[in-house]
Structures are given as structure tokens and as C-alpha cells.
Length: 244
Ligand code: NAP
Image (cartoon, rainbow, N blue to C red; front, side, top):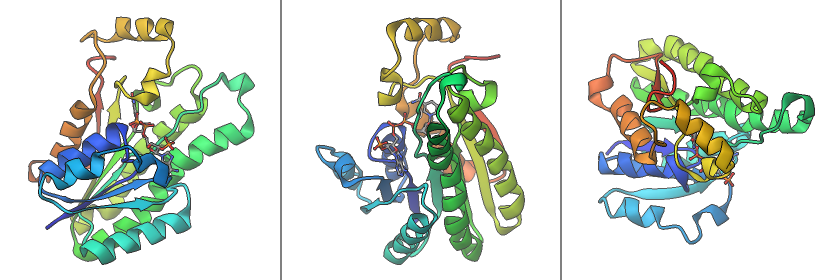
């Protein structure tokens, strides 16, 4: 049985991706930063109900050492790592002129360095297997920038460069690496926006609605599938036509 690791997967887009990959037949390694994220949360039960195995791993993906231990533990438990989804991400928004250095550094560390950490360790396992799929969560903020998100948009733009670099470094070993760039998806992250912000955003979207987490998970499932075997180094925007 093939195995998928999805970082930051206790809730939101990560949980939806984990459930979708379970439906596709993967054993699932869930990850989140604290045990509390899995309390009052039925994601593990939903995944196991699909007839696959599922374990949760508490690790801070901004930590190089945590990621090394996480990958080691998953490899020992499941025997292979076939899909890595670098999903964990945070926002700490504020206008650049008022943004404190530690707030900038934290977002870069969680959103961007985590991709280096996980890709390095899981990529090493995939190189030995001579196969693997790596899917990174970028954002429209990384493609177009967003006022109030200097830190977040920097991290998400960097992920696009990291995706292409990974595709070039690991392609000859049968490993693909692609990114998805969601637009505005209904999650706790977007629930934090003000009504005024939400209205302005809907005006810009051709489909005049937010995306659902399952609509991100579907594209990730495609990128992990055999049908995407010759797709690598690409960024797929999933935004309901935010920008055309
Ligand atoms: P979410 O609901 O906040 O879920 C992210 C999960 O990652 C949370 O459970 C979070 O835990 C966890 N996490 C945070 N820091 C971590 C760390 N250092 N190590 C391990 N886990 C950590 O976010 P989401 O909206 O589903 O977003 C998922 C991904 O999609 C992110 O990369 C985000 O940037 C991207 N994205 C989202 C949207 C959107 O509209 N929602 C749009 C574009 C891109 P805590 O709650 O404890 O922080």
C-alpha cells in the first residue's frame, strides 16, 4: 500500500487532502503542530473508515530536526513515502511598515523553510525508491502579491521557486514536484477576514463564490495520480477565476 504524508492536516485544506488521498487508497500520515489540534476532531476516524491505515504525528515543520524525526517515523511505520503534501501554513498579516521582524521571520519559517525541511528528508526516501510525488501549497498571494501579506506572499512565492528547483533536482529519479495556488477557500484562515474584505474579494472572483476545501483536494489527488505522471514543476491556480 502506498503512503502519503500531509503536513498541517488536522483541519482545513490539509484534512480535506488527507481524506481525499485516503479515498484514493493511500495510507495516511497526518501531521500537526500540537496534540490539541486532534482533540474533538474526527479526521482520523473518517480516514480509517475508508479502509486505510492512519497515524498522527506531532511535529513543528519549521524545525529541521522535527522533520527528520517525522520522516523517519513514517518510513519505519509504513515502509515507504509515496506522496508528500507540504500544506502546513500560517498567516500573520499586517502592513509592511508596521510588521515586526519576528512576525516576518515566523511566517517564512513555518510556510517556506518547512518545505525545504520536508522535501529534503522525504525526498531522500523517494530518491531511494526512484518514485514519489511532492505537492506544495502556494497561494494566489505568491503569484500576485497581497497588501498586508509581505511575509505570507514572500513565503508562497518562494514555494514556487522551490517547486521548480525540486522538479529539476529530483526529476531524473522518477519524482515529480508541483504546486497548487489556491485563491480564497472557505477555512478558518479566511473566516478571519472582515465582511468588507470578503465582499471586495467576491467581486474579483469570476465564479462569485469561495472555493471549498474539496476543490483543492481534487487537484492534489490528480497531481498524485498516474494521470499526472508527466506533469512536473507546474503551478496550478485554483481560484474560481480570480485572475485571467
Ligand atoms: P488552516 O486551517 O490554518 O490549517 C493549517 C494547519 O497547519 C493548522 O492545523 C495549523 O495548526 C497547522 N500548522 C501551523 N503551523 C504548523 C507547524 N509549524 N507545523 C505543523 N503544523 C502547523 O489553514 P488552511 O486554510 O487549511 O491552509 C492550508 C494551506 O493552504 C496553507 O499552506 C495556506 O497557506 C494555503 N492556502 C490557504 C488558502 C485559504 O483560502 N484558506 C488560500 C491559499 C493558500 P495551528 O492552527 O495550531 O496553527
